[in-house]
Amino acid sequence: MWFKNVRVYTLDTGFKYSTEELDKLLAPQKYTPCSGQDMVRFGWVSPLGQDEEVLCHKINDDYFFRCRTEKRMLPASVVNEELKEKVEELELKQARNVSKKEKAELKENIVNELLPRAFRLHKENWIWVSGKYGYVVVNVASDKQAEDLIALLRKSLGSLPARLFKFNKSVNDCMTEWVANGEGPVGIEIGDEVELKAVDGAGGTIKAKKQDLDTAEIKAHLEAGKVVTSLAITVNDDVSLVIDDSFALKRIKLSDTVIDENATVSDDPAAQLDADLTLISGEFSKLIPVLVDAFGGESEAE
Image (cartoon, rainbow, N blue to C red; front, side, top):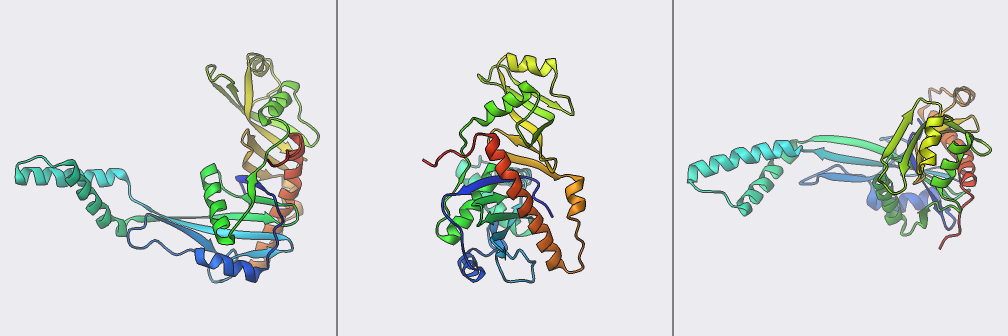
């Protein structure tokens, strides 16, 4: 188990709860499957597996939450095709045009009829909260998903002063400088993938993958006014990732050395889970400060 894509938040205050307190707070938002006309449902499930009741797993000062989302898949094309047939049938039978209001009612009836038989898609996402460092790491790829999960946790706890990091330096400017100089700051090595965009939006977007970035071609784009909006990097030779100008971390991979050093195979699922989660908290606790420092440190909250 590993967090491959994350959004990182910082807490303005401490985070300290007992598992008993958290179980009680999270219970009202516990996951239940879709029913009736629900298109989507999401809520907390046990990090320890479906047979467990505990809704938060705590390891020292690290808190792990797992959210399950169920979405009913009802393609618009299916609904529209069914609607088209019913409208044609009604118009032919009654020799008149079907009104917009009638079409809307027909469509609603079709959805209500098909929804119970719709395919159900499930996915699970994790949140790690570091009580020691004040990080909230959500393993999702999109801003919207991250905000939804943060909002759910905030609703359960009553308050959660989590916000996206703000830095003393521009992420764009820093990454652009690294590529222009051909090297990153201490602890950061530039990879072989970059995205460049014109500041005014008129010059388009350039994407380079599996390519040496210390070339005349890349530098020419920078000299023409383009800035780096996404960059592949390796941090401390331990973790490789792609970081963008919103501080989204994607395609995060551990080095073979780290994997070998932390290889743990246990017949006990609980012990294996603890080993995986401890690795996650340990590696991200080292990764995040390096990135924060690379962008001039965290700016004061407004």
